[in-house]
Image (cartoon, rainbow, N blue to C red; front, top):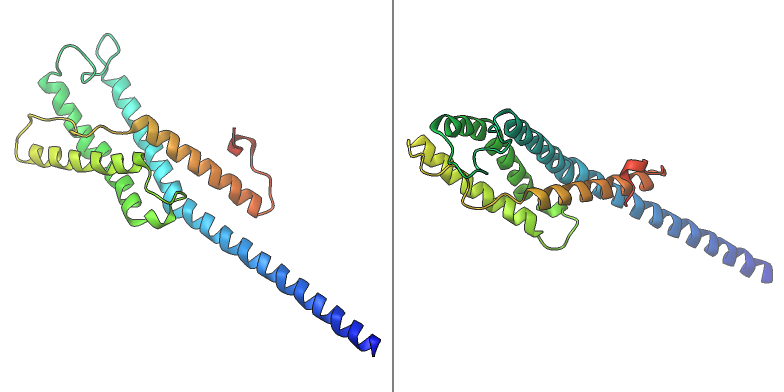
Length: 188
C-alpha cells in the first residue's frame, strides 16, 4: 500500500512539474511574441522614421545653412522667399510625410506601448502633425503666411524615447531568445 501511495505521489509531483514547466514556457513564448510585435509594429518603425527624419533635417540644415551656420528659421533675419520655397518643398516631400507616418504608427498601434498611459512626447508628436497639416493645407491654397507647425516638434524628447524603448526591447528579446544582448543594446 505504501508503494502505491509513493508511486501516485511521485506521478503527481512529475505531472505538477511538467505542468508548471509548460506554463512557464508558454508565458515566455507569449512575452516573446509581444516583444516581437512591439518591435516590428511600433517601436521599430517609430525609431526608424524618427532617425530618418532627424538625418534628413540635419542634411537640410547643413545644406541650406546661412553663412553663419544657422538655418533660416533660427536666425535674426527672417527667411527669404527662396528659403521659404525650399523649406516648403522639403516639408511637403520629406518631413510632413515622415511625421504623418510616425503619427499613424502611434494612433494605430498604441496597444503595443510599454507604458500604461500615452507618453507626452507621443501626444506632442500627434499635435505637431495636426499643426503641420493645417499649415500645408494653407500652402495648397496659396497662403504662405505660416511655414511651421504652430505646435513644436518634440525632437529631443521623442528621439530619446524611441531610442530607449527600442534598445530596451531588443535587449529583452535577446534575453528571451537565450542570447546575451549586444553591448550597444545593453542598458546604460
